Amino acid sequence: MGIVGGGSPYPYLRREVNMDDTNKLSIKPPHPEETEANNAPSEGLVLLTLGRFLVKSDNVVISQKAIRSNKMWELFKFLLAHRGRYLTPEYILDNLWPEKEYTTPRSAFRVQITRMKKAIGEELFADDKMQLTFSHGCYCLDIDPACHLDINVLEDLSQKASELASCDPQEAIHTYLQAIELYKGDFFPNISYHGWVLPFRNYYRRLFLMNVLELIKLLNKAGLNAQIARVCEKALFIELFEEDIHLRYLEALLEEGKDKQALAHYQYITSLMYREIGAKPSEAMKKIYRRIKADTETIETDLSRFQEALQEQEKMEGALLCEPESFRFLCKLEARWMQRYSQEVLLGLLTVTGRDHKQPEPEAITKSMSHLKKILFNKLRKGDVISQWNETQFIMMLPGLTPASGHEVMQRIKSEFTRQFSQNEITVKENMQPLNPKIP
Image (tube, rainbow, N blue to C red; front, side):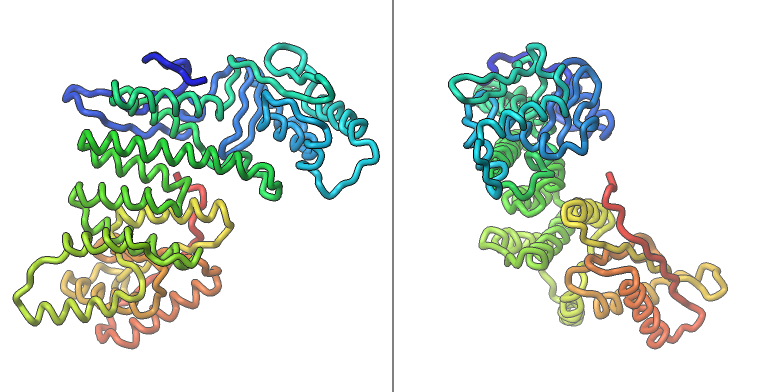
């Protein structure tokens, strides 16, 4: 059942949207530690299943106490996912461990239940917080409604926000943001080989995406494009390949007049999708690309400028050049991808400087940086990202390279710069390190 009324039954959930003096909504992203503290109560039973697994009773973490009892936790997770339903031992065993055969499945299952209680803690099943009942040959796990189970809270908030959308859109925005904050990732993310978890995982993922898109609709009606962009950025850290969110993000950037950032994001994400999952831009993505190009291109009457632009476009078939703001965001997206699939990504920094380590003349810097940019377009791949960080530095993101291969790339760039650039007093210094997958 959903929750009705305007008050929040979850006071520990932070209100992400507040009203300022101008009566306009503004979203303030919380500090990660503050978010974690505000998203769960310190007392009672807490069960977290989205993006991580945690069982905590009165501020004591139980799920780490019996960390070696993986099989018992698998059984507990199955019962938790099917809470409130009476299931036969045969059904549970067939779904959990289909490769095993039992001569007496009911007797074998009773042994597993006893081991689970012992491994997890008999005290958790001794009061009204959590009850495991047996009736007519079936088992059922019940969780007290007063306990904090994140998927229950997510469903309640989602329904409440949907009911508020037509009558109180501002309160609906507050509620949608609370629901989105609860979703940290896949349901039971450490279970990847059990087929039974997939329908649950898909359901909560769809619920999260529905909340995001419905929230964007409300923000769009209020003309809050900057807030839409923030919501999309948060959602893309979790669902990197969800095209609908990328489309809404690009639209918000265009409405905010951030045409260059929109172009950089389009080029990066279409390249990433093709590189990782072999997906080409859809018709919807092509349509918004045409809009981006229409917004970024201006009427040019000077033929020499036109030919320069054509030459530059040919060079840009290689690496993606973007503004520093876009580079930061793309690094965060790549870091999220690294956490899921353990792909190595390198960050490289090239600095134009004098051979005597003194600052070159401004004219020499401008000329050498322009020359270095052309070399980067030629030597780097289409999936690489570069940004001019300041007047003397380019920063690069190089996915899928090892430190050894990355070093070879940097040396080729330096050698080409030295070979082609005639001003011998100018040199390039390089630095490289792996991208931190846990960047905030």
